[in-house]
Length: 445
Image 1 (spheres, rainbow, N blue to C red):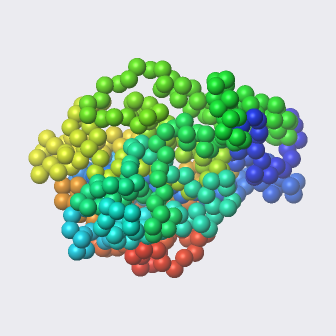
Image 2: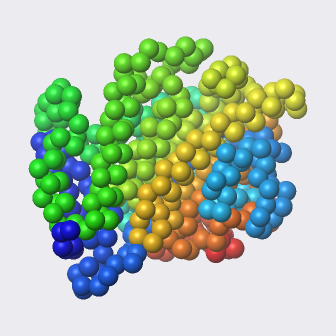
Image 3: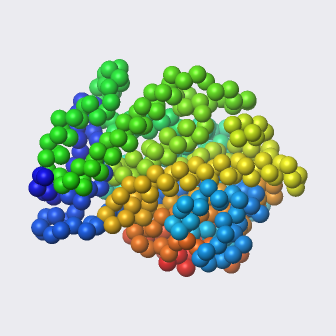
């Protein structure tokens, strides 16, 4: 077995038009340099925000019991394998998603205020304004440690101009991340472009040439990887092999997505360059997020599963109706059941993301243990367009700073941004206020 020598956290494998960052390895621990036996190390902390639109069927979402050992309601059933790594949080409010004198536009405000806690200016012109989002506060403080300060991805394209909701710009309804109060960060919906952003390097001509040769990214770093393996212990060699397998699997799935016949989806135009099957699109993006965290390309990410107000149909789960139309169910039990099915499909995809994060060993735990992953919406009951008692989950261990496996109910009108402050504290980002926050959220640990 090769002797383990400490390697830099910033070590890359390089090839023509390729720069492949490594996952966290035991050989990166300072303990290796001191000649001590490694028993965990100190992996980086990460945070991600996963957004789903149009609220929930809250009766089928909210646990009845508080504290540990709560029963999972129907919509949360797909998350049963990860209940001990979840915090279900009730009572949180996005006040700035409310009209507050601005009339209609709850969907646009829900997305724009979700991470900012700021009242978006009602305009469909160029003078958009909201606030700095929690992810970008983190990116500004720790982004210098990684190749990308943050990653913004999604599964539905969205315009950055035009009227999308009662006089609100489309930018509000499709963008969760705001670098400044006037600079929304558009998300990337094409998995191939996300992959290139994570691992591509060199000139455009080199990337085109590599793509035209239809070789795996791993073929271009083969020689560099061989020399690295000689410096690693058996555990790191195994982990590196698993990482390479994940990269190759994503490449193969993207190739298959280009050759499979299109799936017939009524009234929906799939994003250009993305898989025709919506579930495969979501899961590819989940895998991109996992790879970005595993390789430490970034420690901050946002993922918009569907834009706010999305009217996407779900025929593959026997719901051919548009999601937004169904969310205005008027207490029709048949429509509410269909909303529940859509909500359950979405939590099933979140369960996939958690499974992937939890499958990757890191230090004494897993990638999920060293992450904080939010899942939720800026709308509560889509039929009423209310923004109190929001559907919010917090998954992961926060590097040992979260006491999970509980349902915690906060007093009504507790600002959602208090949760973001508490998460930023756990990312070693100390700020006094964010949007309409009133203090860091307690009872998380």
